[in-house]
Length: 333
Ligand SMILES: Nc1nc2c(ncn2[C@@H]2O[C@H](COP(=O)(O)OP(=O)(O)OP(=O)(O)O)[C@@H](O)[C@H]2O)c(=O)[nH]1
Ligand SMILES: [Mg+2]
Image (cartoon, rainbow, N blue to C red; front, side, top):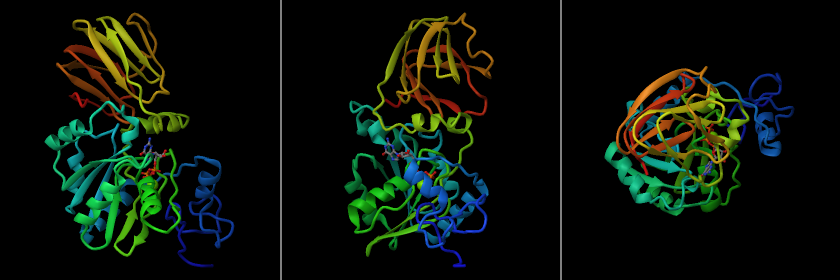
C-alpha cells in the first residue's frame, strides 16, 4: 500500500482498508477520498467530526513558522472578539472579510472597514468575495506586500470560505486546476493542504475552527445550504410595537417587551421565513428564554444566522437554544 498519499480535496491521508473511516477510497490511485468525490460530484454532505485539539495544534505550528496569515471571516458572521486569534498566533495577520456578495450593494465597504478597524487591530484589512472575484487582485497584492517567505496560511472558522478563496486564486494566478473541496457542510477541509500557486507564493489551506456556539451546529443539515447563501440578502424591515413578536424560522422568537414603536431590520439569509405576530401567541416559547436591554442604534447578533438592526432603545425577550451565541453591538450598517 502507498503510504501517506493525501486526498487533494480535503488533505486527509487516503486508505483503502475501512470504508467507515475517514480517507477511504476503493483505489489508492484515486486523487480524492470517497467523501470528497461525493461532495464534488453529487453535492452530498457527509460530515465527519474533527476535534478542537487538532485545530489548536495546527495553530501552534503556524505560530512557530511565522509566515503571513490570512484570517478569513464570513462578513455576515463577525465574531464578538476577532482579536482572540492573537492568543494563538503572533504572526502578521491580514483580516479577510469574505462573502461581500451577500451584503446589499448599498452598504459601503468603507463603513464596515472603519467599524472593524476601531475595534480590532490587524496588520491589514480587506473585504472580498471569492464567489464574485471581488477585490481578489487587491488581496493578491496585499499578500505579496506582507508575506514573509513564500508560504501564507489561511485560517478561520469552518465555512468562512478559505478553500473557496484558494481555489479562486488558483484560477486567477496559476496554471493549476482548483482541486480543493468546497461545501456548505461544516468541517470540509481535514488537514493542512499546500498549494504552490507560482514561484512567488504557496498558499496553505487549513481545517476550520468549529465554534460550537454557531447556530449551524444546532440546526438540521437542511439549513446548511440556506445559511451558506449565495444570494444578496434582502433586508426585511418590521415596524414593531410593544407586545409584538417576530418568529424566525422554527428556532428563534423575539418578543418586543417594552419601548416606543421601533424598527427591526433583519440581515439574515433570504431563505429563512419571518413572521410578525402578537406576543400572546405561544409558538416557540418552549425554547430557552432571556431578556436584553437594547440601547439606541444597536444590533442583536445571532451567531451564524446574521443580525438584526434595531433603531431605538427597548427591552426584548429572546427564545433560542441556550448554546447559540448571541450578543449586542452598535449598528454595523
Ligand atoms: N456567498 C458566498 N459564499 C461563499 C463565498 N466563499 C465561500 N462561500 C461558500 O461558503 C461555504 C463554505 O466554503 P468553503 O470554501 O468550503 O469554506 P472553508 O472555510 O474552507 O470551510 P472548512 O473547510 O470547513 O473549514 C460554501 O458553501 C461556499 O460556496 C463567497 O465569497 N460568497
Ligand atoms: Mg475548507
